[in-house]
Image (tube, rainbow, N blue to C red; front, top):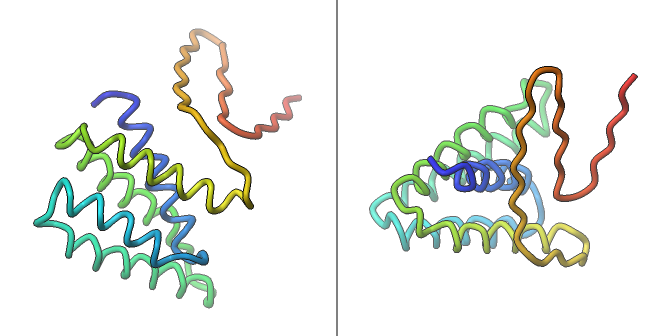
Length: 140
């Protein structure tokens, strides 16, 4: 799979899980379902049910002392987005726009424009640190 598409799937899955308990959940859910309806209409209802189940799990975790399902949910949604992009790479533009809309909505009015594509390679003892926003590294 194209590394850009894989990165986009990861960003979409992680962002979605972060928005499960946020204000504007219905708008977030509707955006994801719209992408699925366009590219995989037969799976749209199932995705809608899974979104609601994910939200319920995240809300329940916030109220209890049980394990936090965020990692598991991220893995599931990254996998779903990756499968969609693998089958329909043309969905990347719409998914990127959706994720960008989420960022703008949650950035407290800060608007971020433009595409970011980062590639790096480290060999031997080399290290690579990349960020499209703030990054703080403390090494000793």
